[in-house]
Image (cartoon, rainbow, N blue to C red):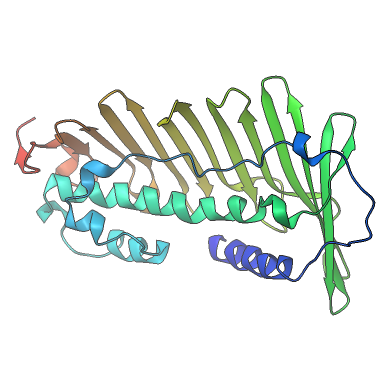
Length: 279
């Protein structure tokens, strides 16, 4: 499913580059009052403690399929030092977040939207494009609800085998005080449940929580938290691995890992030199 939604979204982005505004469109509301587009660029899990790990550096820029191959291999993971094994999970979480985070940011680029309209308290942008007898209309709305700004990107298709009307593709809820928010991405033709969703919390410039969930053959989930110098990552049932728990000290570099498929599920610790040590 992940591969299919990626292909569809990328093809839609290509079509967006061919769309241009109508110079004769009427003047809209004052654009200086328009709300700023939501973004995940300021959300960043701090995995810098793993930068010394070969398994972290070596997997940067990898595709999801590369991690599938590593975690599904028959190699003996018990031979990995605890620090190196933990770095695999950290690298996977960061890579998945970066890949999926590209899609909402790619669509939510205000310079592609044209002139907005305002209906009450709701800002509305809309554009359409067509090819070979099929058309796609996309509508973005922004509305303040309580202490949040709610964004939605919906689409209507005509001329396709399965026409849809005002179907939800991407939604975002951003707290007005900048302390957190959430995103949901839906499959292009299966709109009931999101295929990817993320919630996050911020303390100034520091990301203190990221909760990623994705609909796949497994109920995959990554939960990252930071409290001062202590950070943790929980990896839920990725590749049928059960629950893996990592915790580390950002100041000293020490940490620990507990994983069902690693050293009989025992907690294994590493010291400030990233060597295995007693817990």
